[in-house]
Length: 66
Image 1 (tube, rainbow, N blue to C red):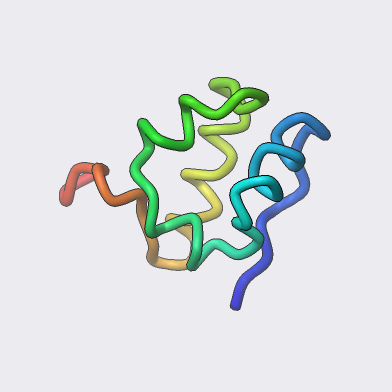
Image 2: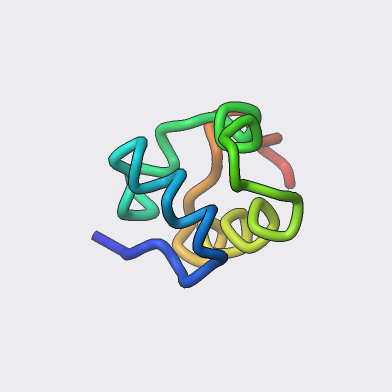
């Protein structure tokens, strides 16, 4: 299991509140679901997308060819 990369404290709290602490867990959510969480802004969302991609993962609603 791959831990979530360091990000802002509000984002870390939002993810922890949803019991998301690994990239594998994060990949079971859509980009939209994560973006709607209080504390998750555009820069954190992009950081998470990059971290997922580095592990060969993606959000459930990501384009297959992105």
